[in-house]
Image (cartoon, rainbow, N blue to C red; front, side, top):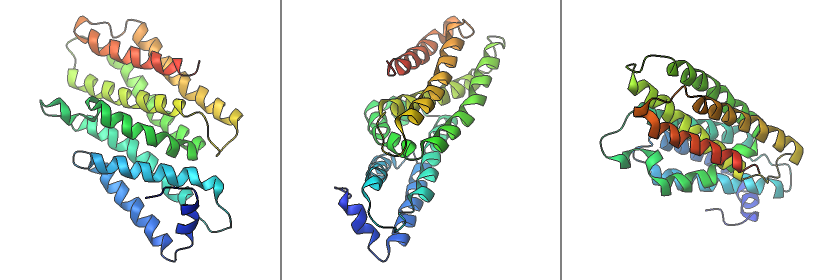
Length: 231
């Protein structure tokens, strides 16, 4: 694995680097899609990618690292696969739900923000793009009768939980060499604004049914703690 900044330069000097980086990207994508069986592999792969992107500012020479091409696909693949884990449903064993495996969740989200901030502009656009319809669905679903589709609401809440966890992790990593501090703060604010929107929804009483009180409180607390990271 990559243990120092100099090793990325050494990798670039290897003749088969292009083939290697594409194979690692392909393997990572397949591992993300197989989230039920490859959770440990995903942790180590995200760690590798995070070390690669944090080494880029220290590169010398003009040899392309190809990370501009591969990392955005990994970033989007991670988020998409987390959504798939919610939509796929779980057995009665809570350990099947990645959101309930706190240790693994924290490990993966420790590395993932560096991938997002590597190309923060495009990553944030993607996150906002997929978050907007979820927030809209959450608001609209709240106006339906209490005897509506509970499973559908559970999926929406699971997706919201993932997005807020991801945004919280990104906001914790507020130092990056890939873009200026001012541009980072603007993007941070854009993401935080979406979380504030979620807080407004949960705080408005739209999801105040007694039987969902526990779930709503969890989302509210998660969203509030995310905003507090900025202060």
